[in-house]
Image 1 (cartoon, rainbow, N blue to C red):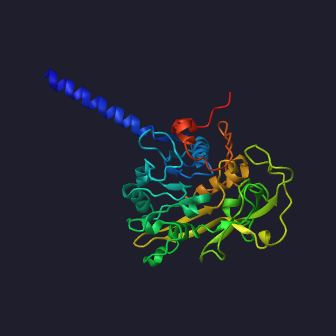
Image 2: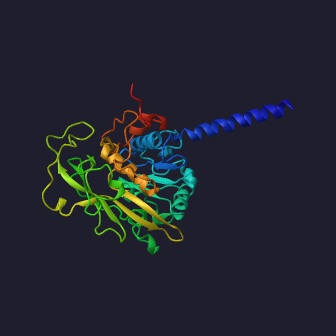
Image 3: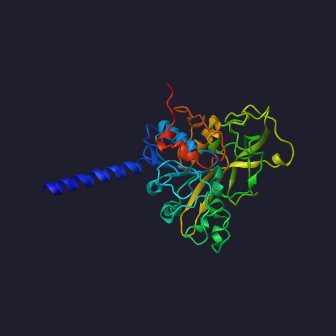
Length: 359
């Protein structure tokens, strides 16, 4: 009997440790009061350059604190050390939480996830779950051609006709094209697209409110039938020298548009789209080629993203737009690639990416 008791205690302790270890691989946010109460949002980070590991916790904090959504942020995790490593393209634990999610944010870049993880994303899309795709989500996956989910790859050109262009094309409306604006030299100033002035997602947003030091991405025009441009990206000159601050010396007060083809026509940087994958239900997308953590320093950028979440979930957006005050210090990092031993040396866990509360 004693041996049985000891065995049960050991098994219980092992299970508890395993559960604790697993939960430490992501961040959960319990929703407070708000229209999103009872709804669940999963935010998927996983890019090497634009600091989605900082951006997604900031958005989850806003969505849960001000709007009532239960949120889970998942990260690229090194399976051996358990640290957050954006350069690890093959592991994002916690995607099973998509099974009962009401909304998915995704900002991954060239991920090659195992079948058991991709299956959760595939199942979510087959049921027509709404999607907010940010920045590098146009080229979210790069999966070898002999694998089950190779058709999700950026620019896919294989035998599955409906999937030509991959996840980016079928779900968001386009896949990776180019840097249209000057990388780290020309910022993005958001201009409400003609015809979108009365769209619910633009409530509380005026020209110039949406801003980011990320350059405008090029997209193939026209976007697929049924897409609607919401915000256009004015390619804007930096006034002054490049600096070492997180914005490379660019400021939201910069207002001189670059002359010539970069702004004629302006590229859409936010748009809506309906999607449907083979053997799946139809769903809606709110896509943006913005979304670095530095872009979220602008309240207008945060607001249109949260407005987009409301719109996808058929929630009424206030006339003045959604509340997007930060509950802590964002302190975004410069966007850049950090290679080699950078992330192992940082030794950061998901909990290190929660916003630090203001004193």
